[in-house]
Length: 329
Image 1 (spheres, rainbow, N blue to C red):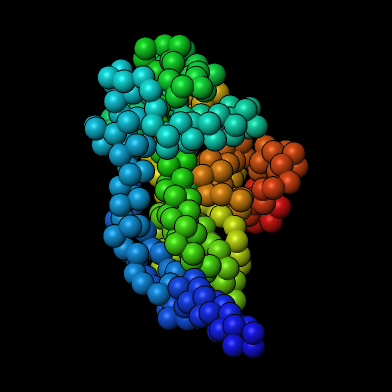
Image 2: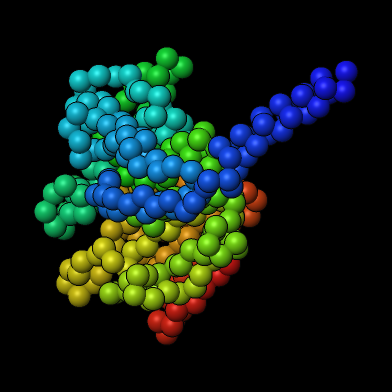
């Protein structure tokens, strides 16, 4: 009987030891994956016993094949070209998230805004300055409420001229997909970043402390890689996304026009908010709200944050004298 007990204990020990080696710290080391995707770069750090480069890149390419408007064969491009009407699982999930943010922000976030972005010269078309008549005519087929999502994943557009662009949420969703992949492999400590959008889990294996994420100063020429940071935020088991107007704009008759277009007015925003960083449970949500806050401005962002306790934000704005100020909410 004692031999059987001893044998059982030894077997249990082997099972636990194997699990620790595979899923725990035994044999695990800091891995790094880097590359280009979605017209930007990605940097991923994770603690694991093997490198997952191939699986990570495959997942990112699946996101691109679903959500990229620059890929003519993607699901979203084929829907925009009216070649198909049914979304794949990724696009459907993203559109559901987008609709929720649109409702919560009173339409400040809207995946149908692309025709207006193009009209102002920030999208596929060359820089131009549309007339009020042109803007108002385009607004007739811009609006998140013009899209209907059916349970069978069919997308119905109320106007044939309507176009869907998930660019303001796709990077965040891509980060979420990679984070999901890492969790499925049993990774407990990681940081996934794509074009400044971030998801973290656990702690940095090198410092044993929460992941440190730098927020760039919202000024022309600022570069986080060169230390031009406004602040550094500690992030643990959360997602972060930043949106700003200070790098993409043009001047017309002595006036600056930012690339953030208000879907509700059809015109570039004009307010003091320069950068909005949102912390949320997932990166797609953070990404969408960061864009919405750049439309709403400081006061509008405050109202949304007051109604949604799961969100936190770091807002950078210019006061009446042009001095940078910040708010943590």
